[in-house]
Image (cartoon, rainbow, N blue to C red; front, side, top):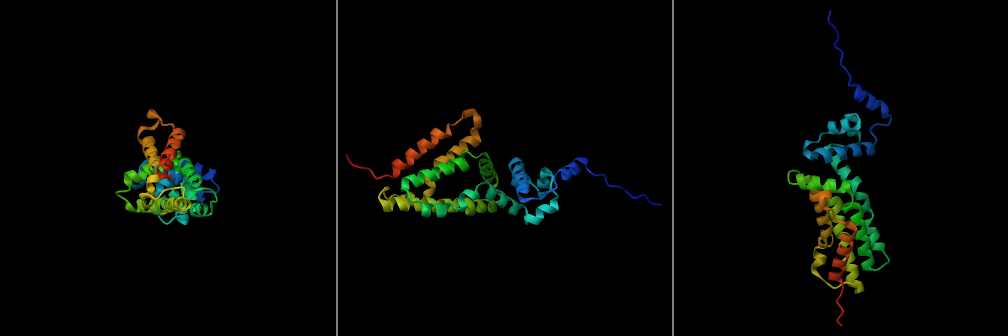
Length: 220
């Protein structure tokens, strides 16, 4: 008579499942996925690793996300995209000056990207693995860079139309307006707390530098 082989259950996983009666909610999956991607990179991360990290059944993840790439796309959106979703309407409906609008966009950029540790982690991952997985860079371009560049170009056009800003070639490359902020991100990623950067003072200097270069010079 053959003896039926019993499969031993992992008590740690069982207890995790027991503590999560609502397992599989998208926000829980995204939180676990972010931690996994940030810790191990895109290439080394697997959907089953995300499931294990979050105490979520692997099959449940596939109820919400088609594959690992779809999961990464959702992580990027959840980290930064809410800031950009209403960006264009905000710029178009802003009733103040172009200078005030540019200052507001800069403040948002620092709050949600430069000072945001999670956003910096995503950027670090893209720098490390974007060359091997160009689809990751494509996601970031579509979700973040493209709407941001469009908004900045609209601000420059608004400033030129109102006479606040002089006409420059910067309108062809609006990325230049946020380049110092990205330098600050790189500083934080590479040098960290060992060589700290006062981001508030840095942002003020960044704003002064940009506005001085854009404003029409008045001859005395």
